[in-house]
Amino acid sequence: MPKYFANILFLIFFFFGCDTTEILSPGDELTGLPVIDLIIEHDNLLQLQNNRSVNLEVPGTIKYKGESFVCTVRASGAGSRYYFKWSYRIELEDGKSIEGLTDFNLSAQVEDPSMLRTVVTSYLFERAGFKGFDSFHVFLQLNNDDKGLYSLIEIIKGPYFERRELDVYELYKLGFGSAFSFNSANYPEMTFSKQIPDDEQYYNLIQLINAIDTSSSATLRLSLGKYIDLDNYIKYHSLSSIIAHVDGFRNNFYLYKSKPTSAFEIIPWDFDKTFWNEVDAAIVGYNDLIKKIFTNDELFLQYKSTVIFQLNELLDEDVLFSIIDSTALHIKDGYDLDSYLGNGRYNFNEEISRLKLIIKLRKEYLLENLDTINQSYIFE
Image 1 (cartoon, rainbow, N blue to C red):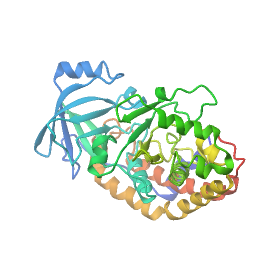
Image 2 (cartoon, rainbow, N blue to C red; image 1 turned 90 degrees about the vertical axis):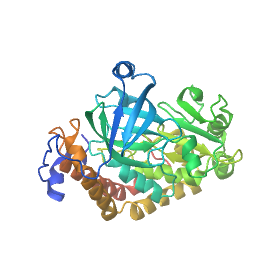
Image 3 (cartoon, rainbow, N blue to C red; image 1 turned 90 degrees about the horizontal axis):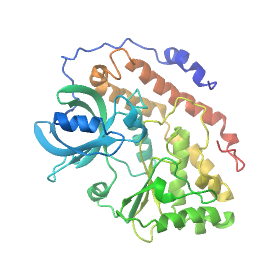
């Protein structure tokens, strides 16, 4: 067990204290937390449950704030669909929307028993200047059966760009095993999922990967920079390293090209594994792109100065703890009614304190170890 994490359970009580969470009965009213009623006919639900390892779609109906919406439903997520509490991908029909969204995930956030990491991480990436996505907490009922607290998360595809009046030429989502090099066997079509347009043309992505392999270290700003926005990527990678976004270096983000001549930029995604429990996790997350960036003196110094700036300006504990506390107050009733989370399985106050402590200790650890970030850094 890492040396910092070993003390977390003890320090939780020392730094923040913990009150016993009051468990609500199922008959109590939820206070201010929206409820989504999802209705799926019995036979269709059985078919969905027995085929959730594939993207089988079934028809359904949603009731939300007094309105009814016809929709299609399928399982969502890669590994998360194999948990008991799994996530749903919803696409509304007839041009209707819920809070402006025509399609979205009902995410169980299975890696985050606090249900707070997406809120905190979304704030940080948007403060850093990245394009964000809409999300908010809801309480899900399926055929009148309580399924618990979920995060409703906007899908990044065509409507996402239309709502923001953004041009989009190409969009790729990185899946498990995505690699930024051809130095070993790599077939990008198998691990990079092309979202926009819906075709089999991977030429621009392949050009990017080849440029990472072949560009001269001395000329990276010009040779590699025409394929990917290096300033944007350095900000993304450094912040992902700071917050121990363990799923954020080789999968679970988007490569976005606004115009044919634009360089790729990053749209961050999927935050339930940020602020990972091991506060002494790798100071610089690994992939072949960041290894290449570190071979250039100017870009390396830019990376290190970006880390220092983000630690001092973005990781403000007063602000982040306030976001955590206000969100926790909003979702507490739903959390306690969720049999997967509350009802004795997790203590919400402990999870809140744990997250705060991880943020605090992660920042301290990085500030104390900044000197280990050098151009010969051993990537883990």
